Length: 353
Image (cartoon, rainbow, N blue to C red):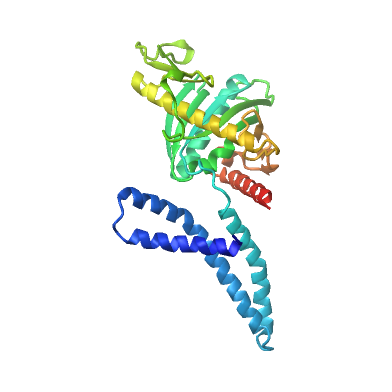
């Protein structure tokens, strides 16, 4: 099927969906299914129509250029359209790129302190709050699932469920090792230290995404403990779930209810297993190539936050911004995420050509 034939079939399907949805005799489930397809197809069809209108206008201008009085104006407008049409074609190819099945899912965020002791835990807490503010700015829901903190207010590890439109598509490139360079508040000599924290962004898994057999799980119940080892409560309510085939272990102790801790632990386990399966598929597909952006390799140092110089550098795309405070505050994070998405789209387009 040629490009134009494909475009025509997409427009026809969009019109068919419009007619089906206005018929009024659909079940709620079928209407929801068609509405989702219509919403996904609408920006593609809008871009097709914009491209067709530009091409049609260019043909009209070519006819006008034979008129001596209209030639200069027609040629000027033709030059502008000849520049715009390739841009529209690229924008349309990007819209038609195969979708990541997880892009529209909610995400489970996990942040863990790495090397650097107390300073690493303080940095992990800052990163966790950065994503919380970023979620607020996008109108997403940020539900804290667990926090393991220390006496200084740092986080040894923390997790949250982030819900909203397109959450995973925007946050999936945040997975990896984040490094900070600054003078710690605990440092008397004023020396710059380097610390690290690991971020994992997992698509929230639904029952249809991953199947877990009860026989593959070992569930241990134990007593919760807080910072410094003090008891959070006196009942055995903390839950540790081990998925035996993969060795993935999830612990949850924030809730006083064993049932709630188990439910949260299962949600995280399902997300990790879904991510594990996606990573295996990606590795098979990418066996013959190496792609930094979108690899999700959490052993990879992806970004450095240098506070003395006020800069943030994303090492995958060699992007440096001199606004570390605004990035760590969440409001300038899109200035890194947008170029990462653009780079991923360019790489995927290049592989199709």
